[in-house]
Length: 76
Length: 349
Image 1 (tube, rainbow over the protein chains, first blue to last red):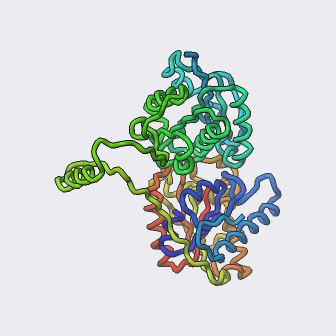
Image 2 (image 1 turned 135 degrees about the horizontal axis):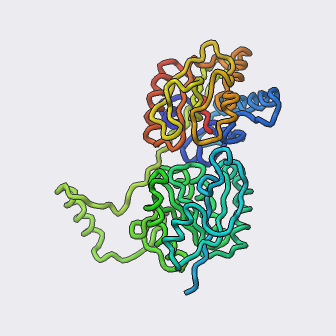
Image 3 (image 1 turned 90 degrees about the vertical axis):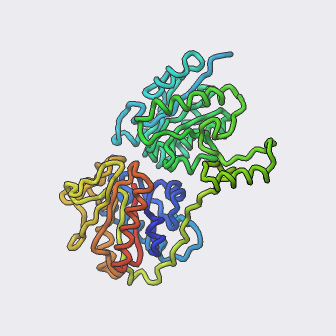
């Protein structure tokens, strides 16, 4: 899906936990996330901590979208 | 010759520990065959014996790959097997990655022959086909009998240290290895024969299939995020409560388009996941954990992004055919372009 959206000319950032799969699928901008069943959350944390975690990951996603790249890049 | 000692690797499901709620268990070992191991044992007869089965939760393995592999290697080393069988994983993505990773690490680090099986579209194939013997299987466990029948002869050959023929002869996925040999007919003769067949409309087989590198050049970066119109897309199956479009929990035949107008937080009462390939408890309690609407609304208010697109698109990426995912994304892309979307955040579970 990432590839088809990118092919349409829209920059995509892929937020996912299993980065090797994202790389093999062909995503260009990748942000690694927390866990498979809750990529952008952490049920063990307090709701406020969880939101903060989400802000951090989404800031990273925005950074990835605004970074010019030539090849597949993982934004750790 | 001595009976071949086999260790079998399975996930939590095939090891009969449990479903997605047990996908987070660390590696464990039990004596003897379990589940699919019984079918392998029956096919091996007295030639080989499954002495132990190692299993691990699919999510645990993928979230802690290095530690899991290290623990599994240690367990396998202690058993001193002649062969390690992984799976088969069919079209289960996390399981396929685990099987490929174990098969390739055991072969490389312990020097013990390994074999696994999975469906051609499993992401584990692309990741590990050059480092492990992978036998192609059907996309679901319906193909277990065929998979066992295809894997056993090659497994015995590998364990006995016999020379392995080409992928076409032995029935494994090509590993990208070339071996030099002398053909009876010279190249020009073979090329002309092939051309004549082609002209006559007869079937012919190329000697050099072109590899398919389907890569897309990265799009230009977003110049000004604070003006960007951002759309959310997910393969994590987030849908309005009740799953109005009945998106299937696996092998999804469709995607949904949902209105976020006036929505600033996804709650337990309003949204859920339709995905059957991960433990849904966390996403059902708070779908923002998969589709981060709450924080993007906040970013929108603060002017950090221009706006969050009115609609989000969702499907279930669980055993879903690559061709289907491609088709959905092409349709979605058309709408995104028409809506003037600047960038997409795509989340996967």
